[in-house]
Image (cartoon, rainbow over the protein chains, first blue to last red):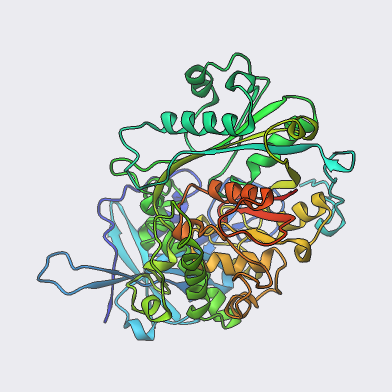
Amino acid sequence: MISTAPAIADIPLPIDQWTQPFWSAACRCELVMPCCADCGTWRWPPGPFCPHCLSQAIAWQLAGPARLYSFAIVHRPGPTPADSPQAIVPGLVEFPEAGGMRIAAAIIDSKIDRIAIGSALSVRWVPKDETNVPMFVVV
Amino acid sequence: MLRLKATPFDQIKWQPGRRTLNKPAAAIAGSGATPYYFRGKSAPQTQYELIGKAVIAACVDAGIAVTEIDGLVSYAHGFEASNICEMLGIPELSYAATVTGQGGGSAGVLDLAASAIETGRARHVVCIGCSQQLGGHRYGTSLASLATTSTGVFSLFAGLVGPGPSMALLARRHMHKYGTRREAFAEVVMASRDYAQTMPEAIRKNPVTLDDYFAAPMLADPLCRLDFCLETDAALAFVVTGSDRARDLRHKPVYIEGAAHGGGGDWGRGFLSLNMPDDVFASAGSERVARQVYARAGVSAKDIDVALIYDHFSPLVVMQLEDYGFCPRGEGGRFVESGAIRPGGAIPVNPHGGHLSECYAIGMTHIREAVEQLRGTAVNQVPDARLALVTGGPAPVPVSAAILGN
């Protein structure tokens, strides 16, 4: 069984000034994460203060390689009764070179029995509104 | 940037609660509840009608008039003190407060109520909790509305539509890190169901075998349907008053030995943010509140006779048993598999069947069961129960806990 992407077309994408740089980079298919420009502490989600030094200055940097920290497998019926059941895999994707920060993202197009904690992942950008949503496949 | 230095957590001296005649200053004198309904079946009663019935029942149980209520405490779940005052003709409030957050705050209502009593701000504080799921509203898909924010939207794009898949992330990590087996989650469910068989109002009473457990559909692997709690409607209320006053009322007082609501910033929003440090991730985020509540009550895990553990998802019971010191970190699975939570075990857990089998009223049925255990009137009475632990959460901070005694 191959994991399926969750349907995201109907989910609104609210963007504020702190998440906007993420989505601007995603538009160029670049995965960036916020790092404090003063003390170098990574953080997620993006927000107005560094929780370590309270600075508001952010240096957005490429997140680097991704690996799977944890995941769930959610079985769903197919879109129509004629379709086979689907497996949606919500994952928690860890970025060791970005302070070990984690983003919740779907694990797609991957054989279910090959998905494991620690799996190396590569990003797949899924178009959404004016930008792209990161999903991941097991390498 | 300038930052003041905080006292290290280990060095904080938590204040014990104020005591009179070597008894805690505040006690639960009354306990009231509506019937327990399957999700939506409480209609056409409104949420406030359910609350009103629970408050009246709690006052009758205590032996006070509703007009004697001068304090109202709840935790964030969508109802207001003002409406309750109007509805029940409460003449004057001198204390009204709400624990922020979600299901984590349930036991925290006792912390607020005890604070009001200890400081003389009120004489009869009623603590209220209510769950009602009407129309399309279901807790099982509650994250869909929570997550349409600029930061929460990532969870939705990942397919984390309800709390179940998020808890599955924690459970799988616990299994990976400590070798915890699904058999441990099954044992939490089976013990709950065995206890529920004798509970008159339990929604699910049929026993569950290990085979039944492994045959149940996987809703969010590694969690199956039986790992999820019920979705039910109910309101519960408790009258908290001064211990001296409680001794003049109808029942033996159930003393609030200690209560706490708070938690670690590193847990934060917990399963909503999912960036807890690795050692905290595979936990229930309750370790700090555990230390606070034990210090306030002046006891430790080994003194607790019965534990009412918030059981929205069975793996989180295993993790709370570790957080609250009933077994070492990572040993929770083996601990429950040894029979520890059964009658006569190291720590009987949820003798009322809990959220998994009896009723889900966001933690409040656990307070009711603690009261009955300590009055000695529980259906599945733990012999000679003197101290009961009640927990709230795991959920975003504040999580909460209370230790009650007789």
